[in-house]
Length: 169
Image 1: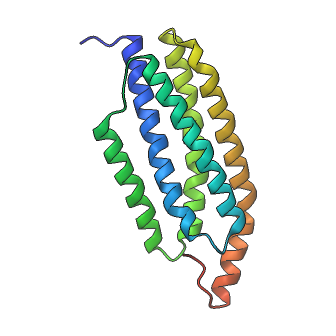
Image 2: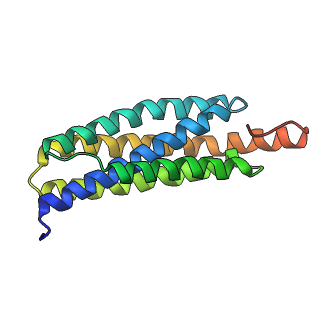
């Protein structure tokens, strides 16, 4: 089958949906171990709510195209999300590694949504672009919020570690 702007857009939607679902699973795993970092925990809980809304917007766009999420891709990315969180949990500095990864991940999502806007326009689906622009703005705000927490979380991590207290979950 020849690729069309619509089919390319559908693939991009599925990929972005899978990425958001993976990120959601990782955040849900991470938030459970942040009792020593209440500002970081609050930020993740807020972004979980935002991400759920983003997933719903992506699903609505997919439904508009007559598409559904890829079950296999969803299963794989959910598993990868859980494995990623578990691998970081094995490290002594899991909180810091998750913080760094989350910071970078916000910008990956910004890039994905910017591309998704181009795909949507190419497929003549401009009605979806406002929701994607909203996601860009949400992801940038989340990245900025993580940016403001890096020093604070690092200082708490150092203090807890030097006091012989458990710094991670």
